[in-house]
Length: 410
Length: 171
Image (cartoon, chains in turn purple, brown):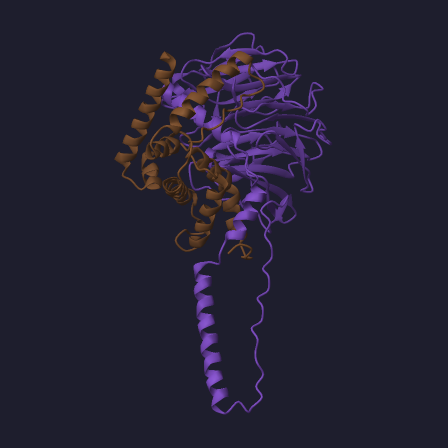
């Protein structure tokens, strides 16, 4: 993409993002303009014609006999008013799990997972500009149930948030500056960043990354919810955020002149940034428990991992080295990703053949995880692993990837 | 008929929820005077064919793109716009420095002004290409032209924006 193309694209995105849409009002107005389906209209016309014929014949008969017989006049019964369908319920009950269609170049990712792995929210995007739909999956005695969660995450081009709490409460962020808190019982509370009255409730620790160029919210460092935390100087668009480890927060994102990985120890007051190689296309960021940080990078032109733009540090960012492991993914694309469990086990997805890889220790030796099946995205809250490849291949593991349970049987 | 009460199944509501914001924004970027109204009309038309011409489980995005492009185009033909409404300046992030903010705001303004000055079809092609990231075949489908024409319109539109920006720089 040329500089001019990039300039045009950014201007269009910025202009589009400015326009907020009140979906409730728009739906109300749209619904008022809807007309019955043509099939319904045809049926109605046929029915009307039949009624007219019957009435006409009846009238002839009635008039034919002089109208002397008392015949009851049948009045058409008024059609019952159909039930109102609200476009924005907090939760729409569904009997069984389902995930909305995934028929384009879509991205399936876990947004949040409670540590009791009772609830997870998946984000289903057809294309990033097409908007996304969040689906909450809940484990029940009868399997998995799902419910739609408002609102669609419009323009969620990048994975946009994470949170883990011990009681199953989860949180999400939508189009700026709205933050929503989703309780285990399905209640949704909006925490608007502009209200200055945040109610984080039961969240132990949460970091929020918004969708496009909108900021980073955190409840750590006594920041509260009132304002986004200061971002790194050179990063405009956040792509990935790792859960904070011992107070250090790592982020990955891009600016006008490329991609950077950055960290802060003081809630964003100061950042240390490290530029990635030119023409990098980062796939993800994994932060281990002992100062290891891995940035898996593909080539922006080819997507190939073999060009080795990936970097790793074993001293919390003090020094970096090229990452040239044995085995592991060969092709990195957006959405493939890399994550690390709290015990330091890393998992990465090959964007080409959709194979899940794992490594422990210094992350130099990688082996396949065939039991996960085909995987195109991987997410974790540090304890649980969620992997997905389309709506019918969603699996979760709570034993470090040894065994996997299908969330939605294929 | 306004005020009519039509039973709408949840699948269509989901389609609406998934696409509505994008449709409004597309209409706005194409220069619609009332993007929300255009979006409403687009969904009304979608509903009329939903389940018949457009299968309930099909992707409604391409159809909506096509309808919005046509709606905005036809309205622009009918309505004499006294002054072409330039998109407001993009609001920069509160995190940007004043200097960076000023530069970006100016850049966006110039790009959007150049975009607004394009002939309709070039503007459509540029928006579909660089905002929706559509391939040329899909742009052609949305605009009702051949892929070659779509590519040409994108190229010419982009070139015109480049020239406009260069002139701005020189002045």
